Length: 535
Image (cartoon, rainbow, N blue to C red; front, side):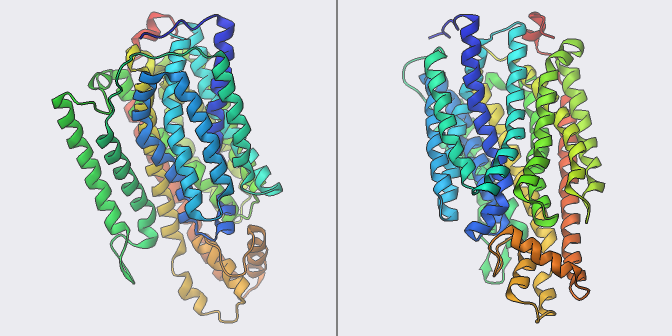
């Protein structure tokens, strides 16, 4: 069954507005989690590496199911899939907000990630059906990129304000009514589209292997520096099991997909899709810059709150500047693309990103104000918003109509999978390099109270120490210790190790963005957009 006529222009844009609301909710949720992560650490009694799994579980689950859900959306209806996904996202937000343990929290985040895997590819198919070409398409994709940036901008502000005024749980509860509104709007205004009917053939083995492989590798990279890559004091490290299993599963995924393709069985990735040059190169370029972005979004709140002593609201406002930049870059993208074309816009935006990430390095120091990060984060966001909009047009411009939702799934899988790997690597770098020999150092200060010892342990290991009931209490205790000539060097040493670790993480992010630039240099302009005069 071919795509249905999208209806009047006014109705199309009204339906598009609810589609953007759904996208905004999902993107907001990712940045909200990053900002409230320190509060989750304190409330649930976890260390930051374990609590950061709320981010990686979400992204890994979403990435591993994007392609499967894209195929299902093409078959059963993109609007139906988007609406069901929004209802599921509301349910996952309820579980997350009510979690009283790390296990329940991770279950809620996994459900939210699964729902994101269903929603995102369906939106790409709906977007292509609503705006098949012309200037409206360029504007729509630019607004789509702007909505992503708006989520990054609004999420930290909303998350920080609600966490400080109420609880870290409040932002997740806010998702519920917003998701229901978006679902109702899509039901009322969005036409149903699908590309085929009949029995839905899906690649279950490939999906399971991909999920196992990504989960094992991501967990290994994140936990290896803190838990040990192979052995611990008590025996075999779980990383020594999960990382090899993850790598073996990814190898198995490639082999199984080749075999299934040869026998005519359904596979996750249609070979025709990877023959579209603009799609293939665009996805790889976006993966590089996504790896850098995910690392920045995760590390900035941890650095500003745990080390510089910012509260959730301050941390949210600082990270919000990144989102404001993304909105600005997305809004201006259409004009830039009209003047220089998709490829040049993408290359210019990507070229700026590693430079700006390197510019953050001298600003990562003690006792500088966290607000010094904001100008660079703003410029970084502008470059990202411009690049994302240009690459989105490039990636999907030449994709055949019957593969649009699938292409959205593949692109999102690569981006989120790359982001999950980068997040895990960044957390591994920061936790592995910063803790050092704190336990041995503390042994030389037996006179420290339990609260003082807990404050130092929490700062060094990003965990809840004895006597610590809030990040505010920890920061007050640390301030007194730092001012004491006896303990000032200890606090300074630990903070200095974290500064070095954070700089290393941002340096790695710059290398990732540079890799995306090198791929983008091979990009042609999409033929479909050139034909419609969009460039």
